[in-house]
Image (cartoon, rainbow, N blue to C red; front, side, top):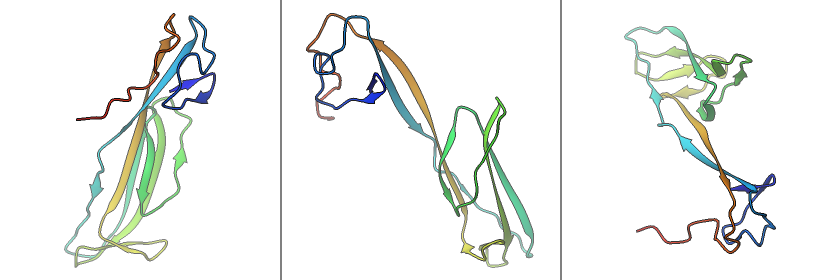
Length: 134
């Protein structure tokens, strides 16, 4: 949770942060997409280019093997990555620019849900749920 551009501590109350009635708090919740693994196989050796484009609501949070992320100025597409690999008869892959032998390609993507909360006349309200999860 953020107030006036600063991240808040779990123990903060509205009094602690000098919030006034009607001030705005911003809640950012990160959602992580699945952890997709991309396998390529061929009975014969071949060279392949694997390209991944993310829409603007998502951003890459992990890539293996590491490649350059191209940021797109498009409203529809946001980030693009490309792997250049060679398939091997044993099912492994070789990243062609580094020679790295790998079993698969991997990426993870994240998105943020942003909610706005307006303060009320409850100055001692705890800003975070401090109850332990069952």
